[in-house]
Length: 213
Image 1 (tube, one colour):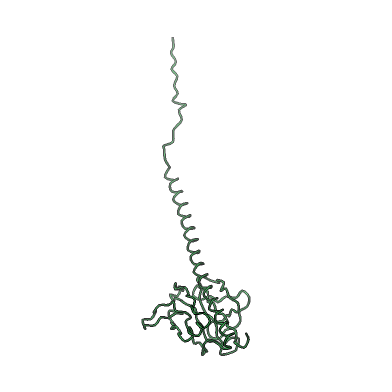
Image 2: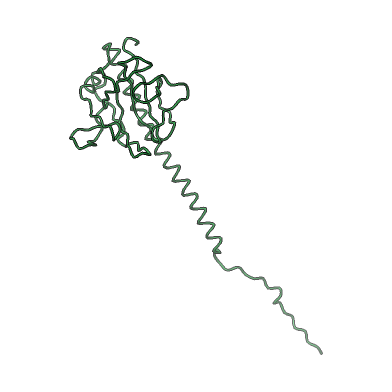
């Protein structure tokens, strides 16, 4: 009698080893890396926007205080000659080692104007602190603070503007009466115009003449 032996070798399924393959692990690592980059970029942008919002808020407060002073006293808080620049507030450090806190561009530092601040404190005894974090330019120059600057505006000498810087290109300055054309002779900006300086936004805001208030 012929014996038949049943074999099931051909019907056995090959079991997959437990765990992940090298390819799957590499794909997972790449995906995690991409998500980490996206999350870090979002976090960095959120921090930048928060700092810019603080700068705009402080600039708006100084603008309001300046206007209130002119309405009360019918003059600028402190007359400025052409290109004369004065730091507003006190939240600054000594950037050039002369023993005096200063602000503005690191290659053109200006000292705190205590006379100007004293005048503004007649309206607001506590002046706003402008964020201390500098705006870093692509050329290595850093920008800090908010200032009053003497200017010629639309051909009219003896005017004053509020100047400050924001991180990033073409950022909203948050105030009207914006000017364009640099820091010496400037004109009223066209709608949507932006002055970008060294990878960042330069905000130059015209302060009305006292007689126009």
